[in-house]
Length: 330
Image (cartoon, rainbow, N blue to C red; front, side, top):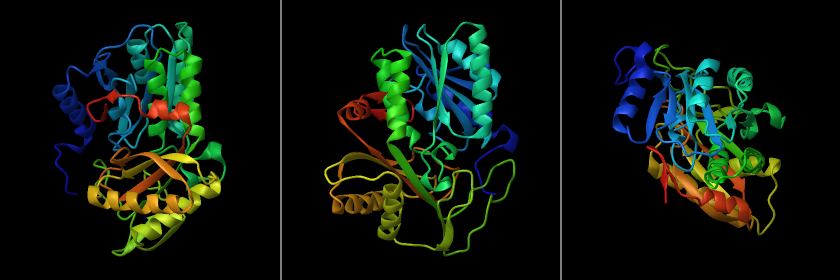
């Protein structure tokens, strides 16, 4: 295992200490717990949006805490859920009088702990509503059972914009749900990754082998086989997405090309170009695109493609300015 760390068991907390020290004017911790990651300055009367999940995916989840996006994040161990108590303490810190939206990925441990935090808030007469991102097309034919991956970016953008515009809890949740209903993601891995406390790869791939449909925790994909070209991967990914979310000629979409941790930005832009060609050939216009690392998996080499069908409402949310230590859009 080659990593720039001290003790593996201190990996998460030392990472968080470095972030707090680097951005004290933007983020802080609640309840003296570094894993209760919050915006430094809350906006009175605004719906508070709280996310959470395992470490190892930066900038997902904590990287979205900041102006115009999320107000707090429960930080779990690598690929582990944050606790219900942490989520509750974050909510108590950032709640600003308009209720709380819990917005997180569709994973069993996260659902259980966010539900428990909701019950704790209910005893304090604080209203909390939950939504999950479930955009990973190849993880399950049943939409409600799908994993939440990089496509939650669009849900954060929609919810964060509506909340910053002082929408009600119902309106903020509706904005997030609209984005979630219109986004689909397909991902693929070229290499495994290593969890520090485990010390070895979480799965195996041969030298010239890749996994199509691989999950961000190393969950099995739909096929393992020879590495394909960017054009071939774009074609297969777009076909899988459009089988699940048909697009007509003239439709417009937002596009997210996401690196999983060890893929060069140059390669991601090659993939962006390949996906655009596929969409343009079908008469679908890319309204706006983002390319970079938005939901990683430690040092896994690979990428994911998220496509979100847009209308004027979603365009407004996606164009809304944001500013976090990891993400800035003006």
